[in-house]
Image 1 (cartoon, each protein chain N blue to C red):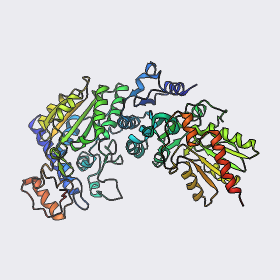
Image 2 (cartoon, one colour; image 1 turned 135 degrees about the vertical axis):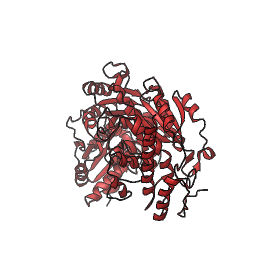
Image 3 (cartoon, chains in turn cyan, blue; image 1 turned 60 degrees about the vertical axis):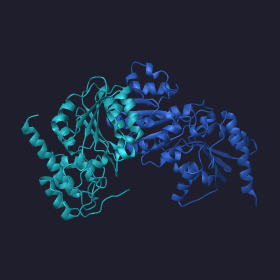
Image 4 (tube, rainbow over the protein chains, first blue to last red; image 1 turned 90 degrees about the vertical axis):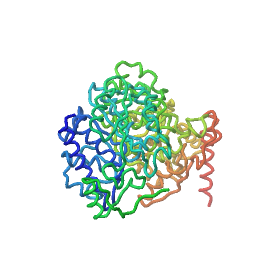
Length: 285
Length: 306
């Protein structure tokens, strides 16, 4: 990728992260989890997927299904920057006057299906992928899951079925941030090796740095799309990416910051100096 | 015409229809070999959850998936997928549950779908049906499958004991007879047994009403109100737990209309039924024509005592 393109993607990702921080107050949201997949969404919508504000109803568009629904601030934060929704609408977060709440829903342009209950959208995406193939369409069907979400048995049912049907238009992306809710994945239900698990299920599997746009580009350009098997891209990410004060912290999955903290964190996004945080953390242990 | 012939005919004519199963092909033996529709047949293996999610995905793309599995696993293993994907999405996903109620005969309680009506009707927009036999089912299915709502049908391929009215509308019951002593409200596979009970009771000079409910949701409220006002006793007959099934539905309807009546329940109460050959099960649980007539008579005697 050209340097200028990388600069543009980074600049967009920074704006999305600002939007996420701005939603992390007055009720809060799943800040840590949203920050880990921000670069992923920015890359997918800007460089990989044929989805734009003018083709959202076109059956030939690509699909992105967000299965780890609690990351939706990252999606809405991006939608506000690429014109799917008015940026001012983000201020309606958790207002009953709008539909911007903690999990995605189809009242927001760009959202293909509601989620929140984990382990559903790999299966829903299979249905869409089957239909695209039935109609001889070549659109891509991408579904983003969490890593904790891989605890759900239905993900592995879907992995079996997608492989059995050789759904090579289906691409699963795992936001591998090493945390599930309030625990480290490897401390609770160890997942490694995710890559070998999917390979054993008959998938084409790759692991990449989910914050490195060049690596993402290389991975998504070398999936098994059109080559007889479903693909998974395991994006190694950092929970809370961009905010050193909450990065890799089990207790900063859901955040509800006060107004001063939001200002400090917006500064932190730019200068990387950890802000002083006083608001309550989630402790489960 | 049978179930498979109907589904084949409708799918051949209309590309919206896709046929899915979680490796339950009892009613779908020839479809995988039919060149016109076999590309719209998806057997996902023993994966009720993924099948339901995929059905929602197909429905998002404009298809109407007709989805098959054993009723117990379809409605309960995949319940949250039905509720969350088809239900919240309000998508036309059409469920056909095989061997519901007593029809699981010798399988044992794991396979007994006797809370299916209760849990499915709790999902907003979900339509719930239980045809009396194969003929009844074939009369009902075209409308059910052409409706925009998600739906659940208790599959029933029993041979009919009488000719059903071809006049079917979603939300309407089939009134076989009206009577002043007892009215039986029944759905599904128990229908022929209630037909037999009715004839035994009529031989004793009683006036018996009989309604084939057909639809549990939306339910025919008027037929319930009429039954309560016309006869001494109304009996809801169902191979279902007492809670949440037809008896509960009747109670809800009567309360809504601020009325009441002597309504009794012949159901499975709060227990799974004793597994065995179907005829033995019906005998043991008291649902043969003879047993039903005796139980009804006993009820009437209690009511008639001064």
